[in-house]
Length: 62
Image 1 (cartoon, rainbow, N blue to C red):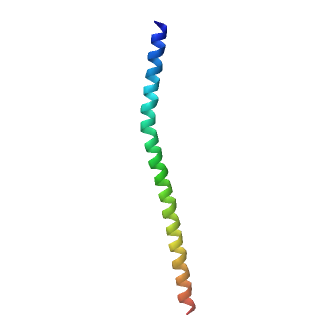
Image 2: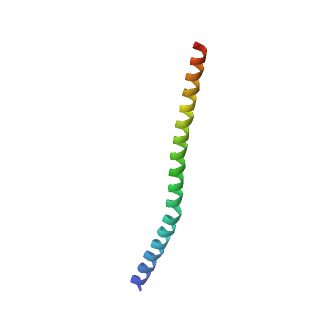
Image 3: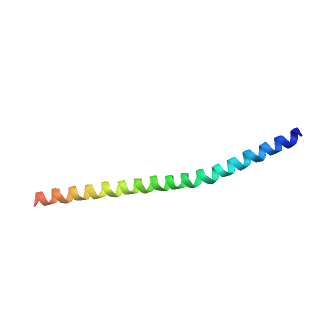
């Protein structure tokens, strides 16, 4: 009787953790992708700002 209760409890926890993993990992992957995308976008914006500043200073020199 006790072993059946323990086995049922273990199955319940296994199911719970499986459902939790099925929810958490896709969200975590999406958040990681979004963070990487934002960092790349920030680098592109910084590069564009530097390039425009250089163009602006070159125009002033001529």
